[in-house]
Image (tube, rainbow, N blue to C red; front, side, top):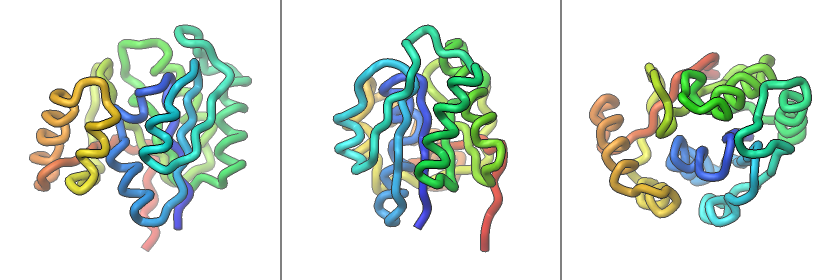
Amino acid sequence: MRSVLAVGAVAGAVEAGCAGTLAAHRAAGDSVTVLVLAGIGGEEAARALDCLLVHGPGEPGAIVASPSTIAAIETVISGIDADVVYAPAPDDALADHRATAAATLSAARHGSRVLHYPGPSTLRFEPSVFVDVSAYLEKKLSLVADRDIAAASARHLGALARVRYAEAFAPTRFVWDL
């Protein structure tokens, strides 16, 4: 069993980027924690994904990759003994998402599996890891704001991965333990 942490700047970011993958983790028996750095919300998604929801200390529009933000993420990583960490893609139009990516990468500097997920405001994304989310697509679609865009994205990424529906990740580090 793995311990998984997905970090998002605000509620909805994790759902858009990797909710299908988190559902697959839960189906495999992994424990899943979602950390929302700024604002409130995410309770409905946490219930649907059967995961722990943690809110960070930030305010929407004011997240910075400061020592206190990094420490807050590190506290969650060590508290759940996370061995897989998902973070927003670093090349994003929104400063909150860029800061969340940078702070998470710094906080997870000792981790062997750190993967970035895309969001609606991601500018450049070159995935090399794909997760087949065909069995979990409906759950993801029930959690996102725009079902049509999420379905089209999953179909496109699935075509790249040669499966029906997929989510994609760009790893900073990915150690495959065989």
